Image (cartoon, rainbow, N blue to C red; front, side, top):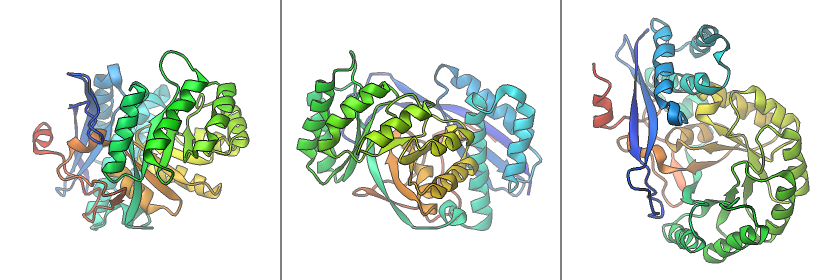
Amino acid sequence: MKIERVASQIVRLPADEPLADGKTVPGATRDIVVAKILTTDGIEGVGVTFFGAAMTGALKVAVDELGALAVGSNPHHVEHIADKLRQAAGTSGPGGLFTLALSAIDTALWDIRGKALGLPLASLLGGYRDCVPAYASGALMRTQSLDEVVAAAGRLVERGWSAMKTQLALPGGTEPEQEVDRIRRIREVIGPQVRLMCDINQRWTVPEAFSIGERLEPYHLHWLEDVTTCDDYQGLARVASKLKTPIAGGEYLYGIAPFRQMLEARSVDIVMIDLVRVGGITQWMKVAGMAEAFNLPVVSHLIPEVHVHLIAAIPNGHIVEYMPWTRSLFEDPPMPQRGSMAVPSKPGLGLVFTKAIDAGFGR
């Protein structure tokens, strides 16, 4: 079996918020690059990447040009193909568009491997469990008013969610009292048993993380995420050692090497791995192994349709972030049911692009 063709396209999905029926900006879209690898045996693999923003067109070109270099290769040889692409890319990597593009190709290759062997990806990678917990993400954003975010949190509880994530570092400048009051109000409406995570998206300084983080401790956050700049490993370590609340981080890191720095510095208590920034499934599993060696749990970032396999495959998989940005790409994607996701039983990823998207690849 050889790779015969690699194709990609840009898909613009509506920027909706279906988990709690949140307000959306009319006409806003999420621009995603989808890829398909076709083999001489007729097996097809699918991949997804994004974060290109204004450079989404360039990201598609990167997928196409790197994919062309993989034509003729054995799709089972994922490490060989990745090395070939790295060598060809020269000094344009290891981060940035190169890694984002490599991720789509790598993910599609693993989809092919699973299909060729007749195994779901989770089983192929380790098969630790067949169902994983999930939390609602994207419904409680910092851009919402306090009343809006409290109402949305209540709707999530009514719809069966037992874990959810909100954001702090509110617009208009950091005011500790306002930040703490927001969490207090959300906790009041969701009750003490619901796990509540909070994402800062690198917007606090270390002193702000100390000050606000300590005031948040009575509200028992499940974790505080990306409290300050992602590569300030020493600053993160100071926060992690000072606060009782676990610190999560890693979604902004490209490739595997920065995770070594983060883990050795003891910067986080919970390792978050982003599929597209880390470079695909191959690299994701390497970081998960590193985290296990440090006795740390792993959580996912976005693309739950793929991450359900990865969190299920490993013994230190903790929970899947259910952010519904990519679910409209697929026919019958895996969906959460009362806070958990079952691993698809079909071979590979178990994912099929919608008919409209699939038609865009041509033949």
